[in-house]
Image (tube, rainbow, N blue to C red; front, side, top):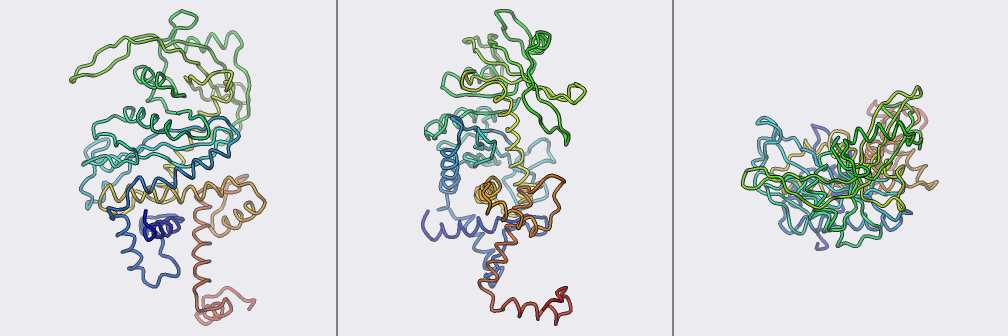
Length: 431
């Protein structure tokens, strides 16, 4: 990216360190910018500039992820894959939206791959995005998926591409229950990828005998294999997590579609670890249970660690919320094409990375600065919660605007206080 565009990119990242709302869906206007119209036009030109490629915009995110991964104490890095919709049914100027769930639900379909620290669970950076529109899929990948590719079909090329980056830690790909697909296991594992997938109650071989995963879970319980691992927070209350594991084999034919017809296809057996994670209350009542399948070797990560990794899958849901309702209000953005939205998503993602870096920095100076930002945000934290990403985002925006204004303002602080008093709106009685 040429230097002028690089400067504009950096300015846009700063402008996205703010909370969005329906009435101000655009980036923030810098305090030293004399005309809002000028800043708005500069943003429009950047987001619609053909020279601003998605590969150039994702590069700083991948470098941020690489640097953070190299600093991890774990030999692994988690790659969480998920998808969400961007609802634009009220934005009639967008002509490339697609039908999402029904004819009145239109927008874009976003697939994201998020790096997460495997030792601490901190989100690091989104490193791959596909935005499906009515015309094409706008992608950061070397080879973009086709419009007809299912979400699961997008994963193997992404896994292969990430493998070619030679990250400092071994990637473990985490996907929710939609990825419990034997045909895809038979694609992903021979390619050498490590996986962690939430499973449905499927039939497998256990000690050579066909059994449902639920039946295996009952046997593990009767045999006393569940071990208490840690205290967890479940729906706002403290609870206890238990885990047990068994070696299973996926052996049945898998289903595939060719020419509009469904066929069963035999394939090699797939050996996996079944890790069952339970959450119980203080009385021993079952609150939640997850059936997890993984090919990460047991001598490299115990069952308790696998269960914790799946718990950290929620980081990508929090990222989507930060982009949308809990932060940047992406579904209120006014850009008229999917490509412009895709560019802006990557810019906004870099602002999220800035906040995550601050959020997980435990130095004394950082802890003090975060408390300052929470105060600037005007937000009240829940009891026991020091800060949240949306609060830090809001506070950092106020800080940046304040710093920009004070550095460029012709007024001193004393003069500003005097103007406020003369205007009759000052609460300051100390000057």
